[in-house]
Image 1 (cartoon, helix red, strand yellow):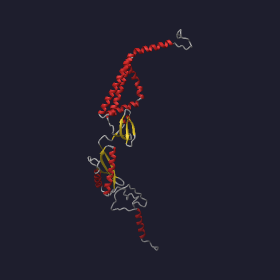
Image 2: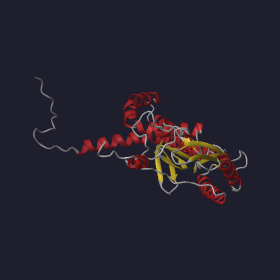
Image 3: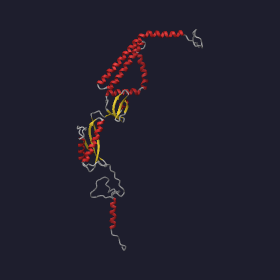
Image 4: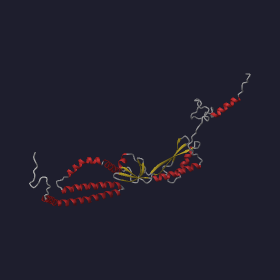
Length: 339
């Protein structure tokens, strides 16, 4: 086995300090720095120029976004353009300082490591791309009122990672952009008008046509209800204790308008039906005891089971039928003992 060469000045198993070697190494580094000093100065100037160019480019993009009322899109694209410009400036400055370094080598290195970076920042990149697509396609805008995943509120801003939604009770929902892009979103202010509806129950003995007309007139008298399309009222259902009438009307699509007008509409309908003496019954349930059922209970040929009463075969409560049977039996002549 070959043994390593040992300098004549190097003593085995001793700590040798050669000040001359240290000075020589520092002198070599200093000479190299002096030789690269012009390159370093040029590289710093180039990088500063790229920083100015990146800032100007970002401001121009943001200004265009503000001019077109798309501030969030301008912020996202401006930030992306700024950092892209800075990366290009850094790579160019690095090649000026080290001429042997080629940008292609840096790009190749980034290409190899981009797989690991992609896995590490998958969620961030996914949300960023989803936010960019939302800003480009504009399924909804800032100040729109939307509903998604059980949350409803006003869109405050769209950021690169998430969309901020302010709920009606003053809370903020930070919704990831990927969730918004991959789920159904209900945009409640997509159009200027929104239709609301409310169901009213009236008694079976009341006039349905008259009630519908009164409801339409009551809705037309509410100032904030749109005249076109006109309010509507339909006979909608035959429930257990009432006849259901469905009222429909149109208002501005903002949540505050919908809630305020709904309260006014319900109040107007109640007052109109009360004035016309139209009953709005409570839910009614009837409990029949064994002696309160009809006389034909248990007789399949006599039970009505929801069919109208046969005028030729009137029914009566069982207790009355049993009382009549006992009375007939008492009035019947009793047999004599000698018979």
